[in-house]
Image 1 (tube, rainbow, N blue to C red):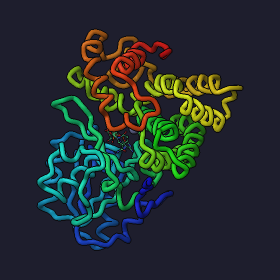
Image 2: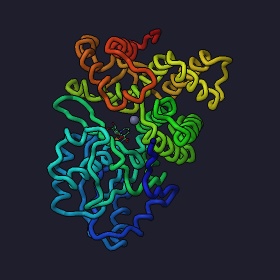
Image 3: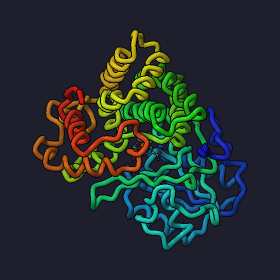
Image 4: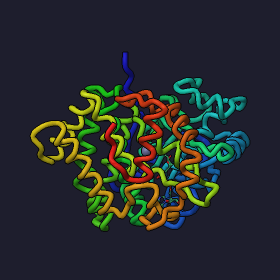
Amino acid sequence: MARFTLPRDIYHGKGALEALKSFEGKRAIICTGGGSMKRGGFLQKVEDYLKEAGMEIELFEGIEPDPSVETVMKGAEVMQKFQPDWIVAIGGGSPIDAAKAMWIKYEYPDTTFEDMCKVFGLPKLRTKAKFCAISSTSGTATEVTAFSIITDYQKGIKYPIADFEITPDVAIVDPELAHTMPKKLVAHTGMDAMTHAIEAYVSTANCAYTDPLAIHAIEMIMNTLVKSYNEDMEARDAMHDAQCLAGMAFSNALLGIVHSMAHKTGAAFADLGAHIIHGAANAMYLPKVIAFNAKDPVAKQRYGVIADYMHLGGSNDDEKVKLLIDYLRKMNDDLNIPHSINHYGPDGLPAEQGFVPEDVFLERLHDIAANAILDACTGSNPRQPSQEEMEKLLKCCYYDTEVDF
Ligand SMILES: NC(=O)c1ccc[n+]([C@@H]2O[C@H](COP(=O)([O-])OP(=O)(O)OC[C@H]3O[C@@H](n4cnc5c(N)ncnc54)[C@H](O)[C@@H]3O)[C@@H](O)[C@H]2O)c1
Ligand SMILES: [Zn+2]
């Protein structure tokens, strides 16, 4: 038996934010990030609409990018005091993910972060509050997914919490929120979405329910991401929908080792003063992982189908896989994303000298590879890597060398 779960309601299109006016409840807590939603005037709109719906409001602001366990615990305490019956999270993946984890702790105060990380092991939520997610970036699709990514900074590791219990009740996909994104954010979050769609399509958990969403998302992202990056606002609107379709696919078909590697490298060098931003990590690793996975005959054939949908040409699956890899690398060039960690600058842009020195990378390689294999996303990857293979793959991602194993 398989399960396909999405939010009960997805409001989409310009002005979708107004759906908040029809919410029923007494108290809503609004969770958000560092200020982009306030500056854009969206936070005020959310407050106004919820007040119009007759609700008392509490604000929890300042959720940092790549949110920490500590922030989750702090937010849950505020919720305990305020006792909301709606949690409304607005912003990028970070504040929405943090709010999802706060929700678990609010409903079950004795739950530890370790308990939360037991894959598909959460108790029933919604005994105290329902959850609405409003995304302002076009990538994570956390507004429709069963995932939340929280970083344990003591360990330097990102942990996915995965359970359909945290699939939001309501998602609001209003493209106006994405208009204020700076170019780099468009690029990184857009390639995150592309990775979601491609990993979902070749995942071992793919099915007839998820395939159409994944393949259509790939086509839309191919046609709109670079245009959106170059400030075409119609394309940006389409990208906001495309990333959500990709999210509907991967929340149910799961992901693969591009994400395992991104989760385990993202904060692994945080002590050097920078992160490898989630979407940029995916963009760099995706072509390498496709080459690795294509040794599996079923995955190879499915990459061929993707290449066909993208009209890339090629007369057999080997050629199609190569054309797909070339196309994705060209997208990285067009979006000013580096191809490898050794050229990943501290600001996420291509640099002659990346911020991760070779000796530090090699010193940490064994542990990063071991952690990536244990990541929740590895199980649904079409090819299971050994420790040695994962280390080799990560080296290819560091040096931008060819994957021939
Ligand atoms: N839950 C999931 O299913 C899922 C999937 C993929 C990634 N993630 C996680 O999501 C996080 C990344 O989320 P993200 O890429 O959306 O970025 P983010 O939420 O970390 O935001 C990045 C920065 O962009 C700013 N920002 C957000 N929206 C903006 C806008 N419209 N205009 C201007 N600035 C804006 C934020 O203030 C922040 O400074 C990572 O922790 C990643 O691991 C979660
Ligand atoms: Zn992702």
